[in-house]
Each structure stands twice: as C-alpha cells, then as structure tokens.
Amino acid sequence: MNEQGTYKKYIRFKLLIILLLVAATALTALFAISAGSTDLTLKEVVMTLLGHGDKQASIVIFNIRMPRVVTAIIAGIGLSTIGCVMQSLLRNPLASDSTLGIAQGAAFGASFAMVVLGSGMQNHALDGVMISNPYIVSICAFVSAMMSTMIVLGLSHFNKVPPESMVLAGVALSTLFSGATTILQYFAPDVKVAAVVFWTFGDLGRTSWNEIMIMSITVGIALIYFIFNLWNFNALQNGEETAKGLGVNVDGLRMFGMLICSLTASMIVSFVGIINFVGLIAPHLVRRFIGSDYRYLLPSSALMGALLLLLSDTAARLVVSPVILPIGAITSFLGAPLFLYLLFKGGGKR
Image: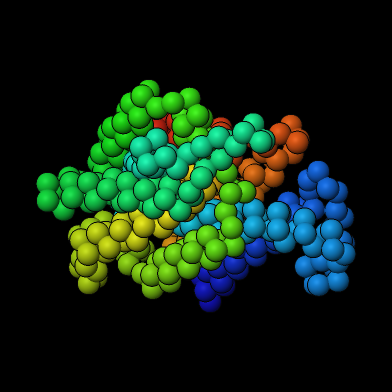
C-alpha cells in the first residue's frame, strides 16, 4: 500500500508539472499578444479574443500578433516533440532536427529557390528584403530537407550504421549543405544573397493563417502517431533486444518514426526558417523533472518547446524594440551551451 501511495504521488507530481507548463504557456501567449509597439492591456486582449474589443485592437491582435504567437506554439510543439522522439529512436541525447542536417538541408533548398529560381527580391519602396514567392521557397526547402533525411535513413537501413552514430552522419550532411549554400551565395547578386540571409535568420512573423493550418495538420498527425507509439518508445529505452523481445518492430518503428519526424521538421523549417536547438533543449529540460517515461515526457516536451519559442520570440521583439532580433540567434544562444554540456557529460561517462 505504501509503495502504491508513493507511485501515485510520483504520478501526481508529473501531472502537476504538465499543468504548470500549460498555465505558463497560456500566460506567456497572452503577454506576447499584449506586448509590442501598440500597448494593449491583458484585459483588452482577453476582451478582444472574446469578440468585445475595438476595431484597432482586433486588427493588431488577429492580423499581426496572433499569427505569430500561434506559429510559435505550433512550431515549438512540433520541433520539441520530434527532438524528443529522435532521441529515443536513435538512443542519442544529441539528436534533433538541427543536428541531423535537416535544417541545413532546408536552408540549401531555400537558397536554391531564391538564387537560381529567382524567388528572392528586394522591396525598393521599403528598402528592405522580401521573398517574392514564399511557396516556391517552402517547397524547395522541404524537398532538400527530405533529401537529407533519405540519406541518413539510407545509411541506417542499407549500410547498417548504428543509430547512435547517425548524428555524425547529420553533422557531415550539415557541413555539405552549408558548403553548397555558401557556393550559391558566392555567385549570387547582392540582393539575392540578402534574401537568403534574411530567410536563414528565422522569422515567426512570415506565416499566414493558411500556412499555420498546414503546419497544424502536419504536427497534429505526427502527434497522433507518436501517442499511439508511446509504449514502444518506452520499450526502446531498455535496449533494442529487450524491445524486440516485447514484440516491438524496432527497425520499422525507427524507419517510419524518423520519416514522420523529418517530414514534420521539414514542413516547419520551410515556413519559418532556421530555428536551432529547440528540439534539443526542451526534452532535456523536462526530463530532469518528468523522467524518461514517454507517457509524460512527450507532452511535457511539447509544452516546454512551445513555451521556449514563445519566450524567445517575445524577447526578440522587445529587447531592442522596435528592431526584431533573429529568432534563430536567440535559440542558438540557449541551445549551444546545452549542446556542449551534453557532449562533456557524455565524454565523462565514457
């Protein structure tokens, strides 16, 4: 009875962590909607969301700030969830979309669209840079990111590269795609180079409601698949042989799971640009409190990813307002130290 009571207390603690993450994400979202050059109180935001706000507040919230906040939540959920699943499938704590070459592959595809296909142009009226055909850029980024995925999966399936070593293949692919992107920029006119650099900064404000819907459907389908495989992910934590003994099709789970992860990451990156390390940071932050039970680790990682991206984007908008800092730079500052910590920690264990 005492052991049963201790277990229930442990489960309640995990559920409490998840509820706190839900509350923190909701409050951060409300603050992100209210914060900006047009000052809005939390009361005005809530009243506008309920349909009782004035016209100016409705325009600011529904046309400018809400798409950005919703994009941050969906992208954060998607990137952190696939990072959490990749770390299980590859049994490598460093696995994420930014360490497997997926993000760099997308950057090369976007660069190809802007430099070769002419989708990057300059807006002379505003003396700035804009993307003339964002859908072509997104399609090329998606195709190129999936190429990176197919190479990694091919190495695993045909050459029997150990899952733990697939991150090394991702590093090699990242270098390859970064070199190819540099060559494209070297021969491109200045205007197109500026468009490429602008895209790679990462921007949560470039998505429309149509693109948000596409991302939502993609992330939703991925989450459904992951939820149905939570038991399999838990079994895999005890080793491949143990998982196979419990009836898990390890090779099929890894192949199809990686495909779903890469498809989701490619879709998100193709719309919002390069946002590094969210998929790496979030699972490790919550694992210290939640543990490695994927029934609780997966949803808490998703919520932590949404919270981190919301906080990062809000900071990027407010630190040197009205200038908006690149969101990719903010997340890199957060993720790079953790990446080094995990490397040193792993090296110490060996």
